[in-house]
Image (cartoon, rainbow, N blue to C red; front, side, top):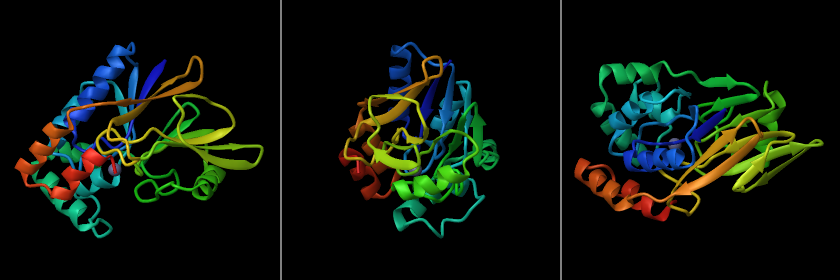
Amino acid sequence: MRYAILADIHGNLDAFRAVLKDIEDRGGVDELWCLGDVVGYGPEPSACLSLLMEYPHVCVAGNHDWAAAGRIDTADFNQDAAAACEWTAGQLTSPEKEYLQNLPLTVTRGDFTLAHGSPRDPLYEYIFSYLSAEDNLRSLGTAHCFVGHTHVPAVFLSAEGICRKQPLPPVLRLGGRSIINPGGVGQPRDGDPRAGYAIYDDAVRVIYSYRVPYDIAAVQEKMNRAGLPEYLSLRLSDGL
Ligand code: ZN
């Protein structure tokens, strides 16, 4: 079976569509594994949710998903994120909010745990360092974990008691225990503005990571028209 690993779509329909087209061009997948933050920041939250529903998928809750659905508050959000969240909440229908409210914090699939931020603190913890990865791996009930939240592709690999951080390579053979971040679909933050995602093929135990160009200017225009904070649209071109 093949699975597409998608994190942080963030209401960016153009990026999401470009990624889905890329997946089809590569032979398709059996299921989407969505790591949360389907909405927030971007101009088309409802359309992103509808598109996700068209595919067999599992999805965990991101902080923006629960905040836009009213399940948590935005006390931890910066000003732009809180403004975008409020705008997003005004766009979503009741069934869409209900779907987001009911998203689980973690999901287990085979020897993978799926979480938005981290397995021990799914909504809020950012795994940037090998130290936090190591702490999370210690209490992890599966060998591997996919996370999003940082919007930065990376792999934290623990073998023979040593945990190391490395950039996510184009082809990663699973070994040891690991935490893997496929990067962000709708708001990449590693300096590469192209949408990031991964495909996991369990027959060969390999994770392939990809970057996909999309029409950033079109999304920025939609964001400006919606009155979303300017910084949020500008950062899409920088991928930061
Ligand atoms: Zn996010």
